[in-house]
Structures are given as structure tokens and as C-alpha cells.
Length: 364
Image (tube, rainbow, N blue to C red; front, side, top):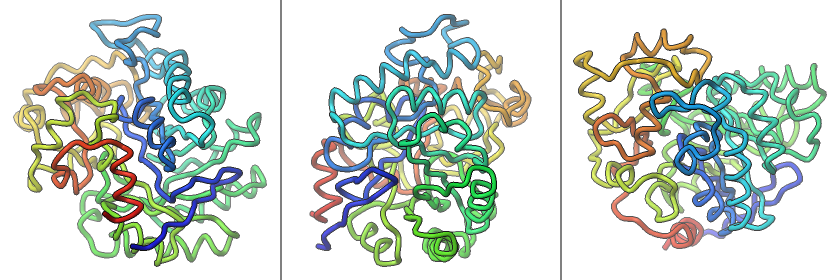
């Protein structure tokens, strides 16, 4: 057992170098993120689909049971409530928000997250070259972009330095075994040179040219040994999402957890997504329907992500991502889209966040 060091991100010290990945819609909200932060990791609240929180209690308008338009899908009121409830669990321990760069209203949701009390903002799904613009009124908020290559980090550091005279407070480098959207083409996800252990050293080298930026490894990290492996490689910490789905406190519906618990290795596949990147999830009834072009109708009620062009891309791939992820959150086994990392099949039982953190920290 190797003793894990704390992780420093900006002004914040996280007791253990473990970040729980942000999982939307509704998989990492107040209960999961609050408990991870309480147990010494960094809990991350997903800002995606907050309109569904507490049975759509905080939204102004819905159509056919869906939050209408971007303002309701990314509900500010609900996000504030999620943070408030997470704080009741973790007190003043550091707490982060994950805001995808590809969403409509990115800047507004970043500001909402800062106002709601996020200490750290994490952004992936695109190159967040203008991220600091939206946090200038919140100088204490740490900024953490997610990249999939040294080149991406270089572009971000260059732009941020020129425009905002600042650098990322930490950088997450995500390999192609993660759940949800990938920063790679379908083919690259299977190529040796794009695997996490091969891109982490390159990103660490690039980061050194800019200063002392902590690098956090993500995508396919499973246990204490994996954490130690990346720390020895020079990473300052790790981010893991899928493993936390297997906890009682995970905000996902019991049916969502059941899909992960029952998934076999071969059930976890790369899918096409309206966001324009491949996404990793579990092969379910929805996927079978989509393959036969028999998926549910696509109406674009929530207008969630910019690359989808108001449902145009959704029609190409055969499903609306906002509707299907929220169906999964609500436990719909017929029409839900269940994201999982490549190791999701290794989740065999539900345990508490406290027990999982203990296993990760002490290797027991």
C-alpha cells in the first residue's frame, strides 16, 4: 500500500488525489459529489440537465415532460439547490462543477456554477479557450480543462496566457477508456499511441514548459494500484467516474445502477453521438432500436448542445442525447442511454462512498 499524497488545485487542497468524474444527466449531483468531498476526494457536480432535479421542481416550463429550451434544461435554480444540498453533506470541503464546453449557454452555466458555490470548474467536450472569461468576477475559482493530447494543452496555455494572463490551475488528461464522450476519433480510441499511459507523459512534458501545472489522469482508472501507477508516472492525481456509479449515494436511479451491475465486458461499446464525438456506453434496448432506425422521435425540446444544431445531428445518429440521458437518469430501461467507462463491467456490487474511498486510498 502506497500512501497517497494530497492534491492541490489553485487555492484548494484535496485530502486524497482522487477526483470523482462529473456525470450527467443526474448521475453525480448532491448526494454523490457531497459524499465524495466529505470523504476527502473532490466531489464533482454535473451541471448537465439540472432541470430534471427533484422531478423538475425548479423549472419554469416543460413540454411533453422535458425541460423547454436551454434555460430550463440547465436550470440555475436547480443548480443552486444541488450545491446547497451537497454543502449540507460536505461542509466547506472543496466542491467542483463540471460544465461541458459543447453546451449551449456555456458561459452562463459557468457563472451560475461559480455563484452556486463551486470552488473548481472542470470543462471538457471541446477546447475551452475562453474559459477564464466567465470566471473573472470569481478570482478564487480554480479552472481545470480536460484535454486528450499535449497539443490541446499547448493551445489552451497559449490562448489563456495571451488573453487572460493566466494558466490552468490543473489539467485533466483523459484517455479513451472513459465513459461518455471521447476526445478521439472512433479509430484512435483503439490505437496504442492514444491510450492513457502513452498520453500522460506527453502532457506532463508540455505542462512543464508552462510552469507547475498539476496533471490528473483519467479514463479507465479502477483501483489503488492504478492510482499509484499514474502518480509514479508524474501525475498529481486521478479522476474516476464509472467506479462511483457503484455506490449507494450515486444519484442515478436504481435501474441505472442495475444496467451497470449487469453489464458484461462486451456490452460496453463506442456509440455515435449528436455531440460529434464517439461516446462510450452500455448496449441496451435503445441502441438496438437506433441501429434499426426505430428509435424514439427526435423533437429537440431542450436545445442542449451546440454541435447538434437543434436536432440535426440527433436525426443523423438516430437519438436525442438530452432526452435519452435523462431517461436513463429516470431509470427507463427501454429508452435510456447508459454511459459507462470501459471498466463498467467490473462494478459487481453497491458499496458506500466511504467504503469505496477507503479501498481506493488504502488498496484493501
